[in-house]
Amino acid sequence: MIQNSTALFSQKNISYPMSKVIGIEGGPGGGKTTVLSTIAEQLEGRAILLSEINFEPGSPWKNLPLKDQGDIYLRLWIERMTLLKTVQDPHICFMLDRTYFSNFAYTYALDALTGSHYYPAQVKLFINNILKIPFEKILIFDVSPEIGLQRRQLREDKIPWPWSQLDFLKALQQFYRKELPQFGITNVCFIDTLREKESVVATVKREILNVIDEREKNLVSYTLPHETQIKVLYSFAKKNELGDSCTHVINVLGAPTLYFLKHSLQLNQEHPVFFNNNQLRCLITRYNQMACSLKGSA
Image (cartoon, rainbow, N blue to C red):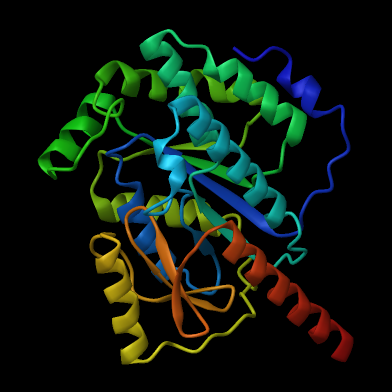
């Protein structure tokens, strides 16, 4: 349990970003990826989906102990949120497929399952490095642990430990319902994912549109990749065992992007690259330069 976190958050002056940020959270088997990929296509140019942070194939971090992995994930999330703070544009709305709260949920549930004490240390790291970055809204895909696990088993997913443990999944759900409010987060909406997909998509889309001004539109255009470039992306995905794509090619700050289950790919000077924080930094730098140029010529 976090003690007096809201008071801690209010002790420092935070420069709030003008860009809008919506966090998407939830346990496995809640249909989050399916719904988000649909909405990303429907709202292209108005809400930019940023894929979740995962270790890329061949990453040396995969072999580290769980605690060390968790610390790295948290630092990567802190870095990503810090980068988003530099986008001073009210026309930009980012939808984050998971946030640093996913990391907290994981360590919270791992402590509950194993009796470890990773979670308090991670909260301390969080408070020492970055305080509350304002989310316009956090959407939590809520599904019972039993149903979520059953859905993944029916899909014949490879479920690694501890995600295969029901007690872990129950603690994960408890984090979102009981612990998340301790961070002072109030603008949270729980999404019931037991309904039909179309109904869930409509609900999530409505919640996002409530954040986005009807007049707002991402000003960054892009050129659709030609057939050869698309083949290069799919060949790269196959080589790295990313599975089937979840979307068609979508504009992310001017970069053609193809989403998969755990990663997304972009073209950088004709070469496929994983979307990660380094790539995001390059895209934001380019976007800010373009925005300054447009303001100067206005």
